[in-house]
Length: 334
Image 1 (cartoon, helix red, strand yellow):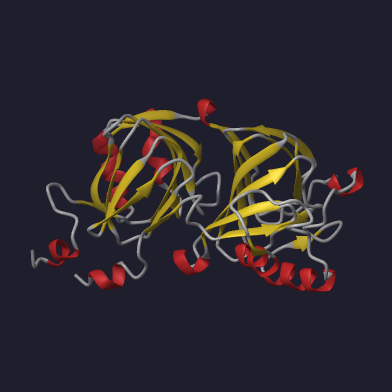
Image 2: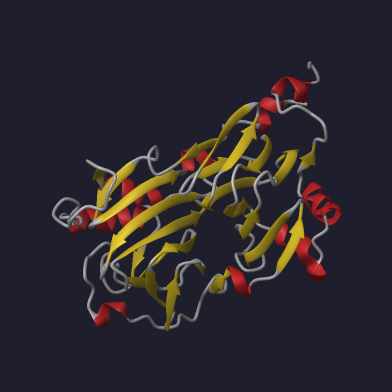
């Protein structure tokens, strides 16, 4: 078994103190995952934004986009609808759906993610390194001054303006209006964990926010409650996995290395990695899989360990009972 081919990208953790930090449009951007780290499968950006901020209407022809509101309130204008998203709300946007948003609370923190990656390069290309890990003023982190360059970068990295250029600040009511499109690639999904299907497996309580059927199989997303010491056993992943810590902390062992973190940390583990994880305190986590499909294990509301194991193994995951998490053990030389 050639484990080097499987583990061609290392697992890693970035948190609010270690993720690359950038300033743009009065926003603190934390770059938690780029296409370079995820083999272009996904990208993650954490944004800390002030009241009133929001881009004019735009859409993404090349990628799906997701927002999870960690703190605060955001009003989304999506395909002719207005959705008020409080903390704990997921908004899934298919390709080509026109959308925008306005920050309603004094300050809002969101996780913004894309599949596939690419759109994060637009932000990185326009932003400047943050001088401090705080939200900047508009003068410290201004919007792009060269609108022609912004438009070129926008189109190059997957955003198409509907009414005006992305990243223009303080949009008017006219710019916020969206109209339903005739053509779309999928269905808009708005979800809160307490309303989603729930199941228990491996001593964890799982709630489905979005499944493969909701996301054109780009990803699935669960909110997971873990007691101190609870977690997932050793396995070789059949899909990329990302763990974002909402409360508590998690310790992840991947290919013999200990990673993981506390609130605001994102741990990204690529397919082929040997991994287990354990909550090191009472924890509430978001767990993403790229591509999606794990939600099918919930058919009929069944969540017993054996059913989850069977489904994960059908997706290419291999469980490794009583096996140390080292590359040597995988190679058979341990």
